[in-house]
Length: 534
Image (tube, rainbow, N blue to C red; front, side, top):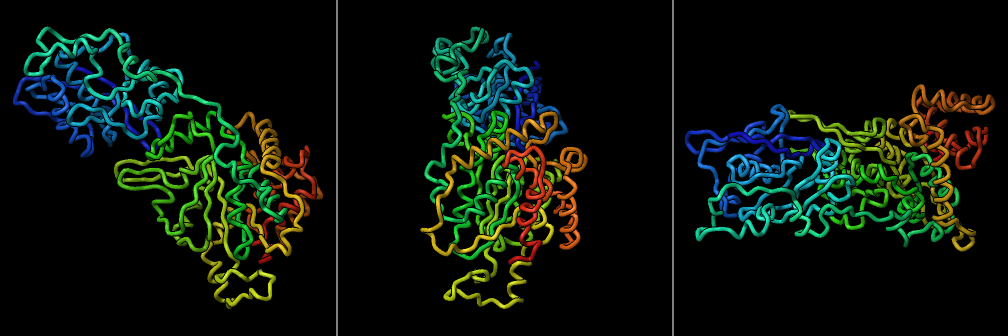
């Protein structure tokens, strides 16, 4: 006897379709799972055996072979338990599934037949929709998350009993086994909708522009108008930014308010961000629909390389992927280990992370804005203007402190801005609110969306190569200024291109159709580490 069901597992953050084939044949009773399973899948035999027995069914006393295809792909996790159990019940003629349904089955089983949640359910249900499945059976605890995918019916079950209608499960003998009157035939899954009121319903809400940051506003920050201007440029073009200044000048406070001026996630971006969190097992609350806010990740400086990039025996997304479509904030940048910082260089260029293992290579998205802050020296007061706060660091110590950040990494940070101590806070003048700044940023994003409508580029910071040369042309005077700066400061070609992209973002913010010399000049002055102004 042979049977086949479909299940899925995670591969990076994407779902992969797996065929669960079941074969029953004569021979000594034993169960074998083949197809490169990990230890969690091999242990599924005992979970499934106990669950079937404790739910009143009969575990086949035959030679059982369970194949997980494709056979050359390593399978991991516990999402196959429910598919294996149902596969055994259908192959042994105890259960017949609806013939009109093409169903994907996901879930981990407890020994009593309860169905437990599994991570990454959003990616696997999205896969089912794209592969043409009509329905998905999955744990009830994952139901709200799965319902975020429109266009496919999802049914949440809490127990293996739920698959069979109540009138059928009541027809048992004294031993608790289903009476021998042929297999239970399911015509449809209508009874599952009754068990779970939310089953098959789309959980969705309007995503506000600002929802989690209502208490943070740039109008609360006195002074630092040039820093706010730089942050607005960074947000408008999704450029990387570094703030340098003595303690207490508001570097951290300024960057933590950066999400309040970013535009909302699009529907496509929201799905990407939610899938990353689902794959990482960090998606706890989904009752309000897809993730509304752009991620803001701020890891401690003691983080490891694996924690930042991702890794582990079964690779999971790291902080750079959890910050996908949002902001990765590294406070006190020189305090991070140098080898940890150096691994950022490739994700900043490629906008993805590939983690290779002996069994497979996993790719995670990493399209994020890098925002950093640092002191100008170890004591922090190298650029302080107060007599009471004098720098006590020797030139050699200052050089060693700054050398913790390599030139290639600094070269990838577009805006390098000094944050001095304001002389008098109360005389700083009116400060623009986050709503006013966000309106300008969103307008700049609309300009870029129209400009790059026929390409994969979304923001000016993503331009490179031929597309950069074809899209952005500097006037002669602005080009001469840039070339003179390039020669005088011995800038790299990467810095040259980043200045051009910043100048385009500044022009978009100012609603100018062409890049002016003033835009190039402003972009150059944001390269303050290149200008040796600290």
